Image 1 (cartoon, helix red, strand yellow):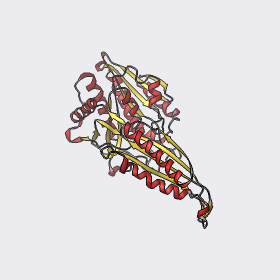
Image 2 (cartoon, rainbow, N blue to C red):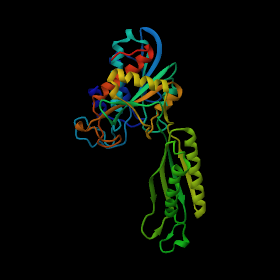
Image 3 (tube, one colour):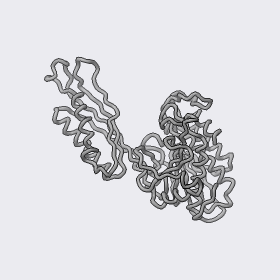
Image 4 (cartoon, rainbow, N blue to C red):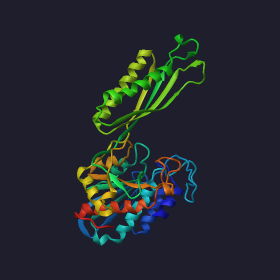
Length: 381
């Protein structure tokens, strides 16, 4: 797994451009004697393992894409591609699923039903790669699905998940405000886009504090404010960019409506025009209650009760949510953090790394979940 992961780390590819990565994964699977379906939903792959006994179809998924980040690590396996890096652990996810493929290729006679391994492209960029794979039949006949995320905020040795809403929906918006430019000393002759934008930033903060039920987690953040060119010119244009995070569709819809209403009325109040665009992202990751219960049972059997944690909901997004909308399943975190080996930077950081031992736990957890679903019992893989 370390060899696979470090190869991928040196040769990352961005979302929707994973052609070489996909070809390399296919070659590794074919060396194992796997039945491989290529070009699924773009550069996706499916490895199929049909067991020697009748049983359910269980899918396991890994994502394969990287991010537009310059790798700043000083190590032998640092990215060789300028400004592209596996800064979220997808290289480790892929290596983990290759190890699972190796396990099943050697143990098919003991498998009940089918194990379907999904190597998915384009998790990092909406509209994502999960839905195209589903459209191409990745979930046809599937009874349950599981996925893991190697997670550096969680220490190596721990695993975590929760029932119900686990990871948030993530939507992105852009607001372009158009006022009337003018001389900085004659503000009465202008319509100040910066002042209007500033008013809007303050107003937007009231959505969560005054409109969202405090028992329903949500975030509205402005991440970019672009306006003006110099000190004595009143800006005619202002662009705001931000994100909305939520865990249920009712709250999500209300925030979208309230945001549009605030933009409209603030701009009207000051005589400005505007253009507002909302990009709908992934829905929330909602774990099936019974499959989350299975996670705690399997995790405790494999790793011990003290290693299994009830996670809090987290306001980052994952397109694994689309799979969970179609079939029951569970998405799980596997601790990959360890300061002693440099694995303490946050995801998407230019020095991001993982404790590679976490891949073994991730593989055991995926196999354990699949086999527990199929047989109702679990043995340590």
